[in-house]
Image 1 (cartoon, rainbow, N blue to C red):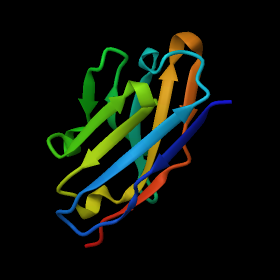
Image 2: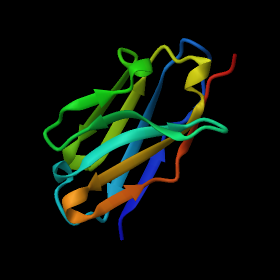
Image 3: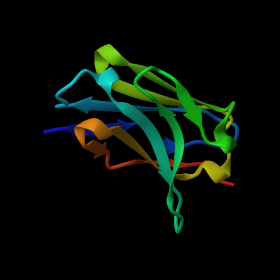
Image 4: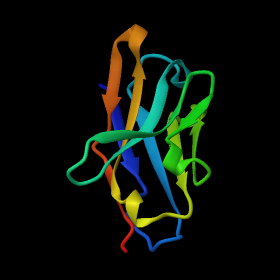
Length: 119
């Protein structure tokens, strides 16, 4: 059974930093077979992409976080990270981790971790 567990959320003042981690277990193939990424959902809004990394290691960022957030992965640990710098109140949301591979019909989500940046 695949498990996806996020950690590292919390409350941080504007301009501060947080590092989110997401550990995967129970996947059948090597971690770099999968697309993975971070998404966020603010209260009353839809879930949006924040940053993704494809099997080749190419990254993609939502415009509002470009230059402030960095996604990375540790293939040996089946873990991805999201380094978030210069946080702002509009970054407040529940952050979710995802791993997927359409060819395998695999699409797994974590339960989310809250990030709060007060005004």
